[in-house]
Image (cartoon, rainbow, N blue to C red; front, side, top):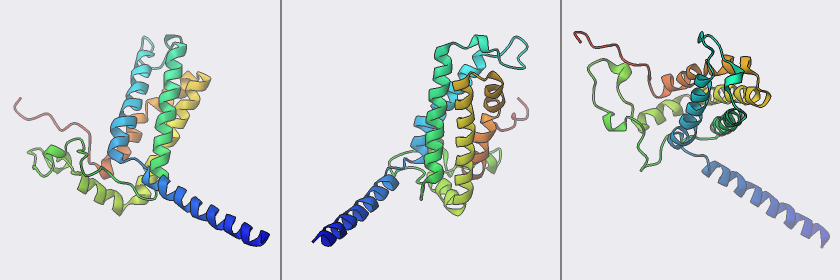
Length: 195
């Protein structure tokens, strides 16, 4: 009887464990909701606070320009950024956007621009195909972002202004390194001739 009870307990545990894994997979947010709800606002918080701390020469940061509240904001923002990037890096499958979820520039997708294909808007379907073709690259780019966010979090929690400067000054490049292969360039197009 005890063996049968133990076997039943193990079977239920395994079934529930599998259900938990399925729920975790289903709970992975879309890239679009991650970008608009977490990545962009947390990165902007980091950039805004760091920008307020530049020294008079503009070649470094001055820790005395940051309040305890700003250090806390940096810690919170970088923690959220790290958690979401890590979640996306570890996801078994990534969905760019839900069916009713437009991505930035989607209204222009399919419209050929005059300045070249590098600046043509990509649809969610195109971005999804690019990620599906290179899921390991996407995961690596997400891990790179998680690593940068973790370093900013460490800098914020220890009030290490040199580390904050080093990592935050390269954060845009970390972001662009993922945008480029999957979304397309976010560099501004060349200034139009004759203007």
